[in-house]
Length: 193
Image (tube, rainbow, N blue to C red; front, side, top):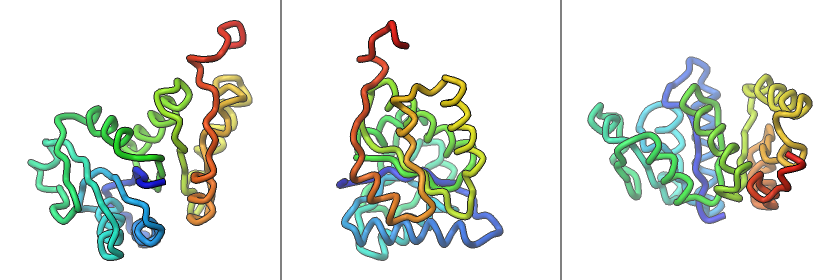
């Protein structure tokens, strides 16, 4: 993988483990020679992942909507900072610029990005790995929901493995690198849908 889009929060939780985790991700990606594509912010986990990647000599491409640039939250130290008009354009750029998606702890924006990456994979809009770093059990309930959606039948058996979740970063990155694309809904027999 040449570049990974990292989804994470722009907040800095009181528990410093989350900011430290983001920094570890940025440093690890740079040390593995993997470029970082992210939301372009300088605050919270976003700023930590970018700063650490830059400090380790990595490529950092920020993609940020103009409204957030105007709010003065843009990270001006990125290797490249791309300004877009909307959040939709931001997510399309993430898809265009990266070879996979890695989700760290975050809030509603992070969830929006994760679910869209999964939805697009199911539909065949991309065949890239979608990773979830479940450090500190942050995503235990989300993973239970993902499993429940599969058990009920809202996530097809062929797609249940699309969400690659691990507690440890190196293992997650290795699994993402070994990802094999699945058959998207658009190529499935309509009788089996």
